[in-house]
Image (cartoon, rainbow over all chains, first blue to last red; front, side, top):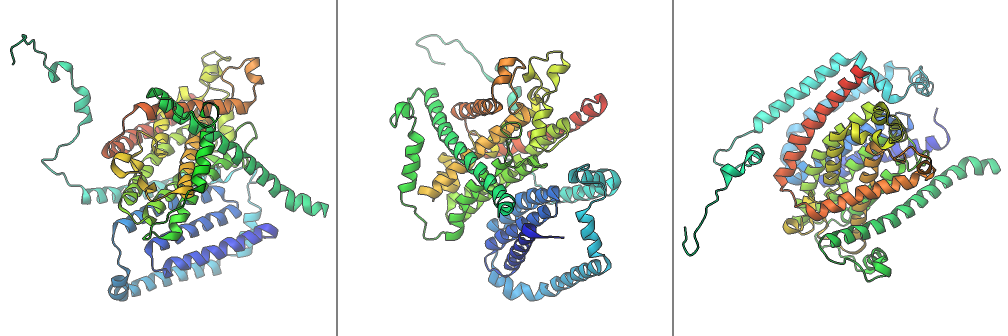
Amino acid sequence: MLSGLAAVFFYLFSFVMIVSATTVVVTRNTFHSVLFLILSFFNAAALFLLAGAEFLAIVLLVIYVGAVAVLFLFVIMMLDVDLITLRRYRMPRYAPVGILAGIVLLMELIVVFISSNVVQMANNLAYPTPDIAMRSNTQALGDILYTDYVFYFEIAGLVLLVAMIGAITLTLRHKTGVRRQSIAEQVARMPKTSIEIRKIESNKGL
Amino acid sequence: MYDFFMVWLLPPLIIIGKSLLLLIMLLVFIAYLLYADRKIWAAVQLRRGPNVVGPWGLFQSFADLIKFMVKEPIIPAGANKGIFLLAPFVSAGLALSAWAVIPMNLGWAIADINVGLLYLLAMSSLEVYGVIMGGWASNSKYPFLGALRSAAQMISYEVAIGFVMVTVLLCSGSLNLTEIVMAQNDGLGIKLGLPYASFLDWYWLALFPMFVIFFISTLAETNRPPFDLVEAESELVAGHMVEYSSAPYMLFFLGEYVAIVLMCSLTTILFLGGWLPPFDVMWFNWVPGIIWFVLKICFLFFMFAMIKTFVPRYRYDQLMRLGWKVFLPLSLAMVVITAAFLKISAWA
């Protein structure tokens, strides 16, 4: 499967990824933990690249590092997250739920890992059925998303839209008595209605 | 031994050599673009601009470089030292690494990858990290406000840039930058029956509204005036760079200009036909492609500089309004229109 330089890089990226993912949980400074999260995203993207999935790698960077992690940083910088109270009072309350979710995910991973034939999958990766030269990753993904499973894709989009509208309606408040700029009104102003020209005789005021 | 050299050592050496060559050329080019920027700015304001170092002040940028290098770097006592020093490197490094996929002539790219355009989008969206890290690590009010503004601004304009890229992709049918340029060999000019005027084939004419939106969005993305609210000197002194001095400051500055030239070259590739000559006649075809490429970048940079001289700065809510309420719907509508048109007319 992996040999030579590719194997060296695979183990390098995997190692850095695991270390940084651990640091995300362990470190005390929340800002640092997001930065380590970004580092592990980077390594995941590199692993995708090694597997030949260049489209997924770049999309991971664009969406998770370029947008989601920026919002994380935003929230962390805006909210004053006090880790000490979090550790002391919140942690015991939420820890069981977190552990439960972790166990469920771990079980799923184990089930997937046991039930699938890893050697077969690796062979599929190494020798894809339509040849890579004939069909790029981007095309294949596009086919799956927008042709084979277009219905599910659209449903997912609608769910996100509903969530977005919900968030907007929760936070939208119209303040009255605030001066607002109306671009249409400004553009529609005509000289006739906005200025008045008067003839003033000399030595006499208005 | 010979095999070992050819297989293991030579390819990396060639890549390193190419990258170094590109880096040096790019930095010298940017030194003179900086000089041009200041000269244009000065000319519009009826000043002389830099004119002391070297003939006509041609070595001004190099003098500035030496000045920045030998000054004392000051790290604020309350700063988070590691991130404070990492931020300028992130900013400059990401901007420079994006250049790996830019094709300057047919086959003149260090990495001619299939998802080149997406890679560029990723790198330009990562540049915000330099600003955020610098602003946060400085542990000071103005840099922090600058960082927040920058994060919001970059996300708003990235969306419009993404949609503009999608329209270009629809027309060219590829994410590979070389193929996008080659697709512009055939276009509106030939359809109109003017095969010699190949500048009409480029996408700037066929997708003119997108060209305008993209140009303005690149101004916002690179924090150039009139969208330089991140470092608006009347409000935030110098935004995220307030606490920086000496070489780290220079790296931020360099990263900014590298990003500007990158955006100019991206506009050239997407809309101005990359290295293709503007007229399909013999003498023009003899000129090497790289010269056309550089000339187009210079033209776009001149536009950047002129806009800096005579457009007043936007207010922050106006900036957000332009991004979300004007550019986003317009570019989304254009994606739909372009896709429908290509489907119906079968031009793609």
